[in-house]
Image 1: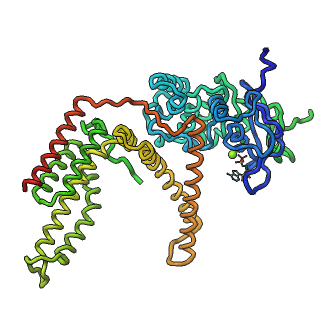
Image 2 (image 1 turned 120 degrees about the vertical axis):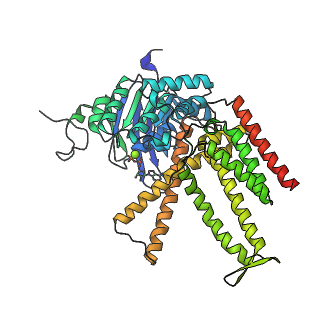
Amino acid sequence: MSIDSMPPLIQLEQVSFAYPCSRLVLNQADVIFDTRQRIGLIGPNGSGKTTLLHLIMGLVQPTSGKVLFKGREVASKEDLRELRRSIGLVFQDADDQLFSPTVLEDVAFGPLNLGLSQAEALAVSRQTLADLGLSAFAERVTHQLSGGEKKLVSLATVLSMQPEAMLLDEPTNNLDSTIRARLISILKNLEIGYMIISHDWDFLAETCDELYTLDDGKALHSGTECLHCHPHVHDGGGLPHEHQQ
Amino acid sequence: MTFEQFSTGSSFLHQADPRGKLVSAGLLSLVISLAQNLRTALAGLLVALLLTTAARLPWARVLRRLLVVNGFNAFLLFLLPLTYGGAQTFQIAGLNLSIAGLWLAILITIKANAVILFFISLLSTSTVAKLGQGLQGLRLSPLLCLLLLFSYRYLGLIHEEYLRLQRAAELRCFQPKTTLHTYKTYAHLLGMVIVRSWNRAARVQQAMILRGFNGIFHSLETATMSRSDVLLLAFLLSAGIGLAVLELAG
Ligand SMILES: Nc1ncnc2c1ncn2[C@@H]1O[C@H](COP(=O)(O)OP(=O)(O)O)[C@@H](O)[C@H]1O
Ligand SMILES: [Mg+2]
């Protein structure tokens, strides 16, 4: 079977979703996210970006439509475990993600849950920290890190599970320019695909090749060329578009 | 809030295995808190002072902690002689004071200080995380250990959340008074903290599940008691037994 005929890693087919007792957040949205794809996800506040990532991870179930993982609907607990082993989610607030006393323990938490032995988990965790240039933080106490350090460590906690792809929810919020630059270079050097929610268009232009725009419950696909323009200059500038020369 | 003020240090008590310290702190404070004999209490205080000295903690901070407890003890010292019965009395400023009450208050004061010092020197010289692991090593229910670790981890965050809300209220010129508005505001603040903590807990749980958590905590360390840990444990346990013997003999 050639690579092309493989089903995509994640496919959302006509997915609608509403939280209990509220309006539709997603309305028959179609999204395809394949391994190695580097996708930016933009949209106004409250347009359902975070919800979309939670749908992909199986944290919430679609009201209608299908979420396909490698071409199959996620039905059993075993499927769900497989999905979550393959795809990692970096939460918007690093404090939600880091709970272990020390950085090393937190990074090793996922690998240990995957059934690795202590020695293997330690090795893979140390390696992940080293890859991200965080070795010096291994013994630090998680809740005493700065915001930027927490963000990088929470990235490490997901990467140590060696996922096939990663979802990041507004990773550049509250980052200073140094950490932001570090994050960009980390992402660019990753061998796996990712989908990033961000309002930081320059950041997306540097790290992504494709774009989904959430608007009115629909997901519009486009390239990233339009990100280089300035979003506020004219009506409709908030949506991806191309300028006529 | 400042936690873990004493957990960093280089003394042998800081380095000792938390399990041994937990067991011996438990035994020592049990013996002292049951003691009825002034001699036992004093001996216990002596052991506690020795341990605190050995832990090489900043005395100023230790004394500040003790001040909190002894505020309560001062109250007892004042109250018990006035209220405790007994045949023997002495007189100050025309008041009949009970001697038995005075002795009881002194006994309580000594015992309280001894137990606090045991806890400071033996338990607060480990981080909460280490104590949690120690408790788990002692086969305490993993659920309870988790509860301890998570309460500790998120107490700070919840407190911060409360401070943020309070600051927001203050910045909009909120001044607490004895008015309905004040009570309402505090009720809202409290409600908000609870809702936010709940949401936080839900997100933390989601994050854990996504990383493959299924209720079992795997530890990175296979802790073994070193020789010095065993020695310390033996010493502390025999001190505890010695105190018990002193109590029963006296
Ligand atoms: N747990 C929830 N319960 C009810 N409504 C929610 C919940 N989470 C989010 N929403 C609503 O769903 C919509 C989309 O939220 P979200 O996906 O967080 O948006 P975004 O991440 O794009 O800012 C918002 O209108 C929000 O108010
Ligand atoms: Mg969001």
